[in-house]
Image (cartoon, rainbow, N blue to C red; front, side, top):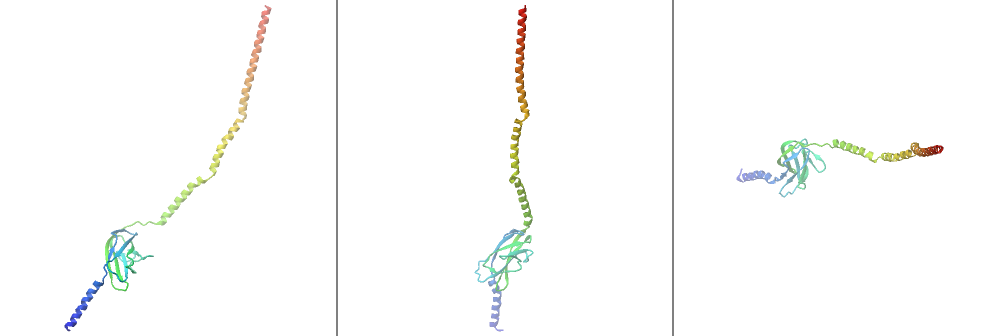
Length: 224
């Protein structure tokens, strides 16, 4: 083997070593340090390089399986096992939901849509256990509260008690008229009238009696 052939082999070998390093895309994953499980959060992928072609994106928590996390593709939640094809660099922000709980890593992988190896960047993240709120349990309570409110409002809109109150207000007046025209009061007034006549008769009797006594006394004096 000549010196020229050896030199060509060295150039090819060095170019094979350098080419992957030169062609690798450098990017940054921006993610929160702490999130709650079962709650959505956003991450961003940024790069300062001039990107001439599209890249497929995969973002996941802990491991790229649906049991640990999911990624939103703009319409549906899907497993991070699959790439979002050709979305980067047109899309730089991605929505993630974690099912895993604990301290782990969140990773982003980029690969050329035309094919090739992927580049990966990971950050530390702590996933706290979040509370799951079930809407189905809340709705019946709201319905029962509305039913109670409706039941409390029914007596107010009911018109019969007002009529009864008016009857009660009118009824004492009727009773008073009956009392005024009752025979008991007539008897009392007649008793008062009879006592006045009795007094006049008594005065007449007293006057007549005293007159008789006076006549008798005068006659007795004449006889003497």
